[in-house]
Length: 157
Image 1 (cartoon, rainbow, N blue to C red):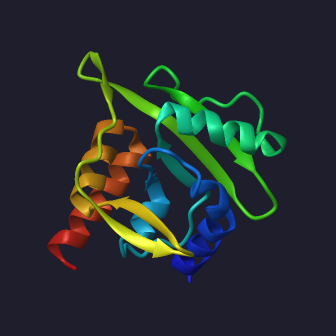
Image 2 (cartoon, rainbow, N blue to C red):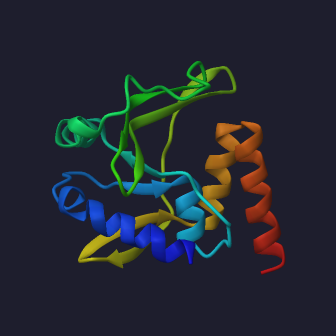
Image 3 (tube, rainbow, N blue to C red):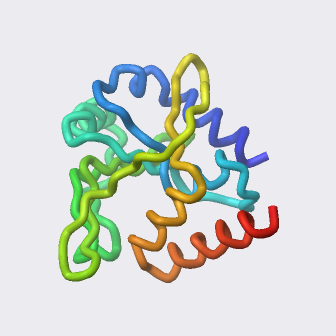
């Protein structure tokens, strides 16, 4: 089951995640799965962090860094980005993620979330409504498709 795989990957990362100073969130496809949306696969774990926690993780995971990472639509996103690959997991870290939307930069804010306990670590996951809002804010075709999955799931659980 994909949710169990994601939880195992978070457990693998938990020693470093426990050292973060600020609230952090799992977003993207992994968050959808952890929120109960049945997806077949996800490529990575997306961590939304503060900039200082992104710096910490980038230092901790330096040996597993995947080049100088920026997302494909780098004109739409700015952040303290980092991408890391170990034998178990691909992780994208986004410190203070901002999205260019409606002709201005907007900070990605998460106010509505729930918490999962995984290996003594409290993981924040945006609610489905919050995830839908974030995917629509990102606005790429793949994000809008995920927003539609959420909409269908909420209407027809």
